[in-house]
Image (cartoon, rainbow, N blue to C red):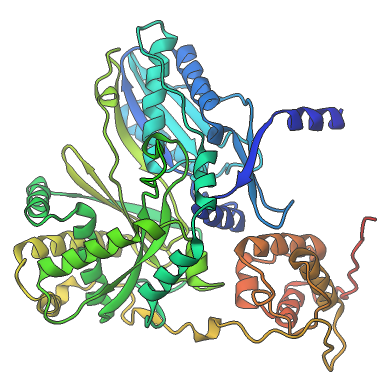
Length: 563
């Protein structure tokens, strides 16, 4: 029966191809922290109007049938490089619930509990579809649709495209006159485009961009765990209108203004005038036909280096930031891990400025169905992620943060300071940017944040690797022998001694995932992913593993090898 099932699964394979850079990064962090609910966005939409639940389910099935990425699973232990498999057909995961007995307050509580329950049930990346829909009837012609998915298959632009498609397919499912959707271009075409890119040219671009930057920029202090929280702040509409007017007058985007405000906030907090934070790029290449309507994960996370120098007016400085951002367009497909190096993180703060097309069908459909976003939930692996979402009523700033590194009060203050600095920027266009920074009042500092802003990463530079086959003066322990065996299998290298260095042997983050999994199985101890980054030398890692084991247990491990 098992073999028949395996044959059926093989017959269901439509395509196999590599991962995009951002997919590799998300895969690493998802596998490293499987229980943290990272990169599982959830969107809750309130629907006004009668809904035929069967037709809605059929519409979602139609969307999954249209897009191979929605039928894709991810695999990383079978080959040297991770890959994704798009299956030919998979059933939609669609659940119906009834909350008609709840009042408004109880409904909000139940929705938050649903978000928590979804995060507590992470997707198995090997078992698609990596999207599930929960349709909740809340009253007469009132319902909520919660869409939970893994970020490895969809970005923010794509989920909005997908929701528009589902509404169109729904209208057809209930018999309304609706033109057929055009054929969709598969995500695999984007992967093919990526494979043709000249990565060496882009690597040189980023080397030049980061040249001379020492250490890392740290806005927060401490070490993050899986305890996260979020805080929101609405930018007043008069300020939002002023921001739009300023941008139009000076040819600057909202993204540029927010990058400038965040730069001044970090510089004020850390006393640094050369700093880095992260941002997401749309990643939809102009040279790939149909890229703006494709469904998948196109965004990438990249460093933004900002230097604040004497003699530049605020408007000229902002124009410099915008030009620098524009120059990354041809080079925004490089993996962040490649730019940072093993075990290094250039920044702890990520800025995400959402800029998606709004379609009328989602605001006022011909069916008298009206959809309105009522909540959004997402967690990244960064200790602090700042989202900026423009909407018809203004601009929402949201902070998602590690509670171990930032209190709720400090997060609220940070969002307020960001709004204050935006206001200062648009009032001080001709002033010297350094003077503006120096004049920011002490009240702009946020309690609980880092006051140094950078860390020396010299200790993260790999040691010289030992030559394969050399012998140390001390006899290796049983743990060292086992670790060495696992490394040689995963890295496909020759015999190793205790001085071998994982990353200098060609190891990278996803191979580290595989090694950590093998170590847990071999020693039956919870070897954390960070152990390999903190102790990349074989003997040091073996000593650490021994420290995790009960003292009474002798290190007499052996490995069974299947011939």
